[in-house]
Image (cartoon, rainbow over all chains, first blue to last red; front, side, top):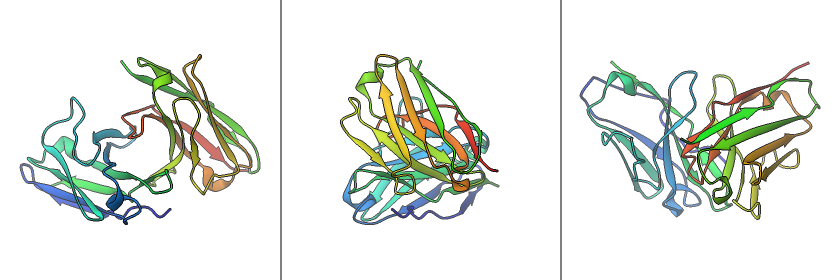
Length: 110
Length: 115
């Protein structure tokens, strides 16, 4: 199972909005509404930010939103803040009943 | 409060074995699927294995199939990963994660495979 494709890096100024893409195939991202997004700060465990494409867990800021179109899912962070600087990973359920992660995106707040 | 605490990591020689454990608390362990996810130093996340709530369904990444075995003991609220025939490329921090969409993670345990 090949990793989902994410941009290596995305940057933005405080207050701006950024979008991270996550591209897979019809056997994973495109085939199921089971895409999740995780935030990981250096040396820390990942934290769930979005699940089932667009659902936000309790406690996660509404500045984070998710969507999907075809084989590509997206995570949008609006009102970018310094604390949002981290690595972000998408994941998807697959037709083999396995899970696959994205390649990861480093978000830099300028 | 949900807590997942991994243990059992360490230094092992290539070809060796290691058993990881994950102690769960703060939720009804027997009601949720569980997973192992790993992260090699400086690299991204890699899903390793998942097990359903009653152990009826078990899945593995191709990279570990035939070498790793996931199991759970619902009476002890514990998840395990038996790792055999370890290779240098298995060196990583191993996390246990709850539920189909990894809603909670442990702090991880480092496994280093080196001679």
